[in-house]
Image 1 (cartoon, rainbow, N blue to C red):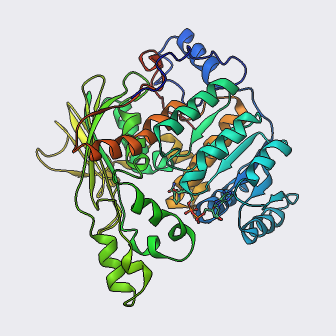
Image 2 (cartoon, protein in one colour):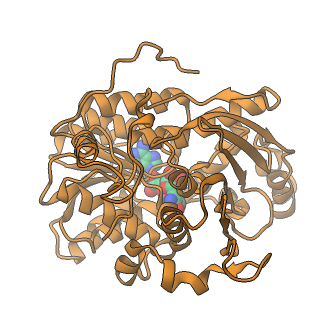
Image 3 (cartoon, rainbow, N blue to C red):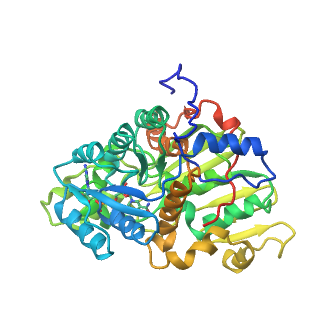
Length: 449
Ligand SMILES: NC(=O)c1ccc[n+]([C@@H]2O[C@H](COP(=O)([O-])OP(=O)(O)OC[C@H]3O[C@@H](n4cnc5c(N)ncnc54)[C@H](O)[C@@H]3O)[C@@H](O)[C@H]2O)c1
């Protein structure tokens, strides 16, 4: 699967980061000072006192990030880009209302972000465009000397995953995938409990994106304008990173272990066709649309250390929301939706404990420290926390909470699941985007606000 068999050794970054990974180590005692220093030298960039941001794609999710950034000290949105001038006008209005100078607006079509990246003095280009634009925006940013961050998934093809890695290494810039689900309280709490050893050795994990998007996919605006098209084109897991992000951290993916290979299967495609028949009049073009995407896709990933991961995608059927978020160890497990915990020897045998009742004891400090400021922000506050961490790490010259290798490995599951589904569920190898560095990269630690 690796189309880059003779790739050069990873460039030592020293001074300007190639990649990210917000992470202090598990604890200062778990890794030697030398390991910690080596890690920071590779994954941190020089501190930036005031982070100048160019935002590309200020729709629903981008609009939320703009609103968050306006509340975070030490950053300014100095440029905005969208193919819809009404959205840059909206952004200009909220930015000036917050007391900042009006940003430069780039609205000359779908590649105008290139002009923005070439023209503007920016520290960070952050994008929440439709999926097909994430990598072009990030490549333009890094080529022009800017750090970059993207909404999820970072990339839809293996070639684009490698393109991100190549550019981050070549230009020595952060290339971060903004996986907000890593910052939800149950995900943070499960990770905190894993780090405290409460579940023993983690052997298996499950995640998913199970979200009834039928209405959204058929809307004549926002995601309806582009997300349904992907359901016509690909059959696999189109959105793996929300489910995988938190459990990949618990399994030390790219930091002691890595995705090795996967098998993937999709069931039939019914939900979108049925929705169209139920909601559009006879003769409407939507009723003629054909969808490649199976309504439930299930992938199994085996890690290099032999651990197992189940990741699901289901966006076309009626159901309550779930990201599953299960982490199973030798001594117990965390399971999401509803969030519950079982630890052998603690509580009653065979009985779940409601995770909410353990929050006072096991809440991740990052949540405790940031939740009051995150109140009212998108997706229960986790979007604010991820934006806060990004700006803080850039300002302090710290490694970010994920690396470009994480962006590539998690996003690669899109293309790999499609390939396995097309081959009747046969195994496909996951490229080692780190080229062996996963063996020596220290694990993520418990970070603070
Ligand atoms: N992390 C989350 O919880 C979460 C939630 C929703 C969406 N998202 C992600 O955010 C991204 C955007 O989703 P959304 O819901 O905001 O969609 P949206 O359609 O509301 O917003 C996309 C915006 O990008 C603009 N755009 C399109 N092509 C462009 C281009 N070439 N240059 C500049 N602007 C362009 C559109 O005009 C629109 O304003 C997607 O990657 C999606 O997966 C993430």
